[in-house]
Image 1 (cartoon, one colour):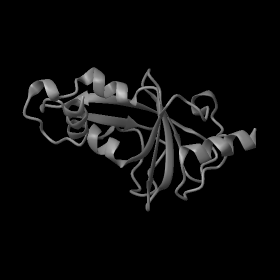
Image 2 (spheres, one colour):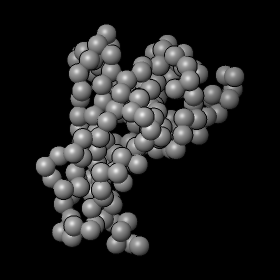
Image 3 (cartoon, helix red, strand yellow):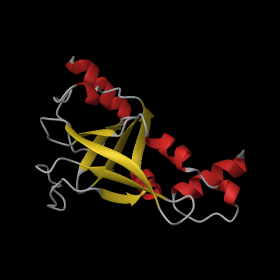
Image 4 (cartoon, helix red, strand yellow):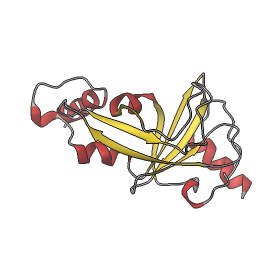
Length: 157
């Protein structure tokens, strides 16, 4: 069990594992993200929250936005065993305020790097991001926790 845990950690971080049976499959990697709400924090964007549906839709709650940005996500295979790219695409009329890059194109990164950048990951759409184009509250860029966001949502209802 401990060996399997460390193998999973290494694969998610894109560190090669010697034994082929220690790598996560495509389906196992996809299951880590599908149907999950992710939360990340960095000094450029602040806190971001996103629900990744099991059907490939993505619903991003970005700090200060008055709408939920609906996009798409997918997992792509690479030439390296056990390493997959997690890709996102948002509407062409959107843009990344940190990079100034417009939406409309798929942007990919190694799934393990994305996973490593998350501050929290929780199953389900507990903020209701997929059910409305209006966020349950205006997200602050300050660092927070999923539990604090759930509490904030309950207060705003």
